[in-house]
Length: 232
Ligand SMILES: Nc1ncnc2c1ncn2[C@@H]1O[C@H](COP(=O)(O)OP(=O)(O)OP(=O)(O)O)[C@@H](O)[C@H]1O
Ligand SMILES: [Mg+2]
Image (cartoon, rainbow, N blue to C red; front, side):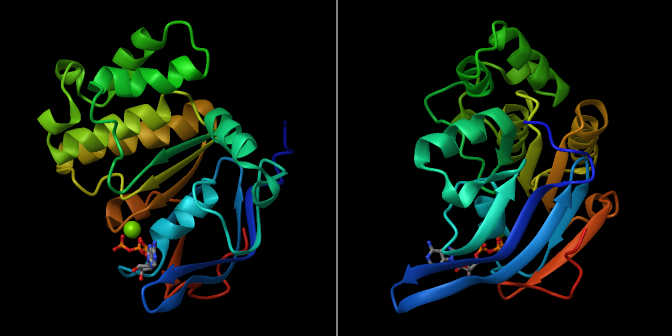
């Protein structure tokens, strides 16, 4: 399961996504070729509707490409069945969704601890509590998502995604709902994952202060990468 450092940890080759809309098929991603190196931080920018969230979902194995291939840690995601993909996500990927996707019937603590338990971590609740403290939510562990602000839910989602120390963390506008100090704390947490645990980060962001800290920024436009800027 180890990949030499020079190998891309993620590589997409002519990856396409076409979905059925009400008025017929919609070409959402129209051939994306892109490599991300291990330990790299890639920023993904582009106008609303350009396909940023869709691309993240494909990279995370949460949506199936309708063309091309996606390889992650040397494995072909496009060839895996649902069970294999679910295991791969559990073992290697963390995803922070644009709309958080917290489980509404679970407290903040349970939301963060559950994936740790599923991964077999013995002190899952202690770890989860520490992760929530790291995002400034030590006083909100027993709150349900509906009892938290958007920015707080976002921080729980980030704690949940980062707690299992994923090889690859995909985050959709991770500082989008946060003000200065909280946004700074989230950035520190994201880059701490990279610096201390070697995580590879792919971040969708409109925030210049976050994009500026990325090793490389690529722009999507209408389902395509803007220029030949995708090669790592
Ligand atoms: N299930 C779906 N069926 C049909 N079209 C879809 C579906 N999901 C998304 N789309 C379309 O795909 C395009 C890309 O959507 P996506 O959510 O990836 O954009 P985005 O770049 O993340 O935008 P934003 O910055 O607003 O979040 C949009 O035009 C959207 O309307
Ligand atoms: Mg989006």
